[in-house]
Picture 1 (cartoon, rainbow, N blue to C red):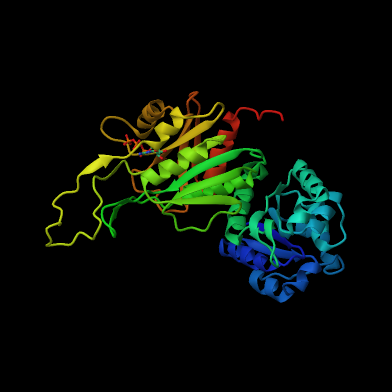
Picture 2 (cartoon, protein in one colour; picture 1 turned 180 degrees about the vertical axis):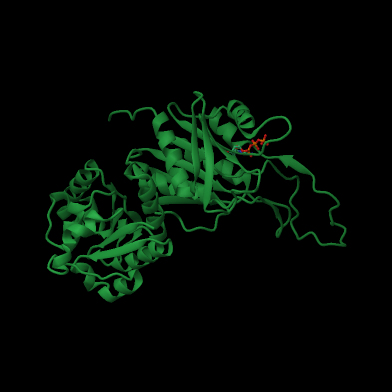
Length: 408
Ligand code: CTP
């Protein structure tokens, strides 16, 4: 169990902080909510007290004998400020201490994550951007806001990411520090495929696989948090779009291929995390195959699907990194890593993320363990962890291999 301080500043998205709080307490953490006085215009202290089981105060004149304005920050393992308004970011960047939350920020030596939410004009204002740059320079994580519906009729960047995204990313920082969400993919475009293709047999049946899409979704979420522009080509994945990520839904291997080839053209990094069916039924019946009818199949002839990864490698733009995934089991001929090294060479990609699926231990689960093999021979082991933490490790490896950005 860790001690988390959840700072809440005064924006309408403050109601979502209750869900972030819930996610932390359900994971077993002790959470102390520190709202600004403005936040309590949106959500009452009783809500935060009931959900956290801890007292809630906003000013430095309560709990004076406990020196709360110093102790809360000193004792925290992680501080998350969600939502962080333009005013809160400005006061934090200035180092002010005019309420309990800003005083706490000054005494915290643990990782700090700010999750901004505000109107687009406020977010894009040079004053706010300077404050964000200052906070990042000092080592805090400042997540980019999601793009979408804001209060009233406005839409644009400034929306608070969904509570599940915030909790997942903050947990990565809690366990792995702020470097796990380094802001090192700004200006980079990344294209990720995820999920599993479905190859139709008739209007109601398909050949599919057990990929849930969770690892690809985590890769997209972490890439967006690290500043990338992210396109996620999702094959049959029933998960909400991660914040800031543009999702292109596809069904079959052929659809996935078309989307990936088009999206990859301008990409700095292409990641093929999807489980693409190697084969599809040779013909697709236009009406349902009924048992006992003359159309009842006795066998299903299959034909090869295109190898999307191999095609992306041949079409790779200069400086672009292509990352493949390999789900492997060992066999009588070779172990998992020997098979994987052969596949890296065969596919010609720059990096191969290797999953050992010997015991069906990956599909649909919230955690994972992988080995990342690079074409230059380097090997990175990412031990058992949440799929978001594994995604952070994969991005750190990818970022270390990216050529420097051209100076504009
Ligand atoms: N892949 C692809 N197109 C296919 C099959 C796989 O782009 N038709 C990609 C996957 O997205 C993954 C990588 O290739 O990034 C390796 O997938 P995997 O199924 O492990 O390998 P295969 O190519 O199917 O090789 P093998 O059958 O020998 O295991």
